Length: 335
Image 1: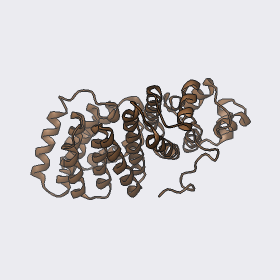
Image 2: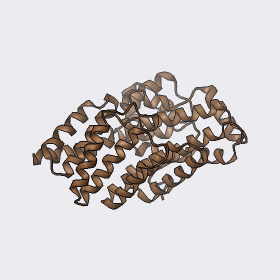
Image 3: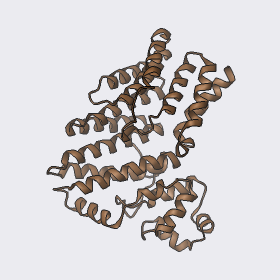
Image 4: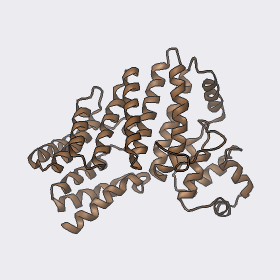
């Protein structure tokens, strides 16, 4: 369980549109104190302090300036809402009995922006915000009624799935698994299977971090057979299973699945937004990871290097690429 000392939250209370806790943490993790940021951006420190403590709405110019300072490529700016959307969401949160389609779309947009922002600033700055939001949208889902409830449940399920990923990314595995379980339940209730399939797949990631190859295989095979899984999701889970078999020393099965996934990766269409990073380059990197586990060092080095170079600009410095860069270094030393 997280503590406020580990991940401090906004003492004013976090609203869905308040980007202040994220911006504060992003500046800190980028090496900027409030005064250093104000000096760099040529802003009054008192004004910047009010903005970063959630007491004043930032101007569009300041949003752009902060975004550029932390290298977020527009993602930090996108976390905020327009004033009309903010008022709508605040109204629904205050009276959650009925939710409208525009509110659901707005909430989905906030979640999408935070996913993209993570590529720029890493998972830790986002955890306080996402956890605070999770409590709000969770209560909203419990109380909401009407024709848009299932769409809302889908968004809330994805929020839990994303929060599970964030916790897994900072090695808080127990909490990650709890959140992924809730995501599966909400996805089932909404009748939207894709979120559940991704949540099951992420269980494999948690198991892989622990070196639990059998756990990787259980999660990967479950995700492969999950109803509603997108073809791109199945490519990844085939690769994840191949890695699990390689870890157990079952090289024949690992190579069979590796070949199957490599061939399937050339046929898949664009991934859905929930797994937007499942690109040809991402699969190339994961094929390289499995190749490395099979001691195909030269192939692994080439695949990892090419995949990393081919990532979109906004993903090349993402914290989640660290694992692949470390694997590339190992492959190059051993080739």
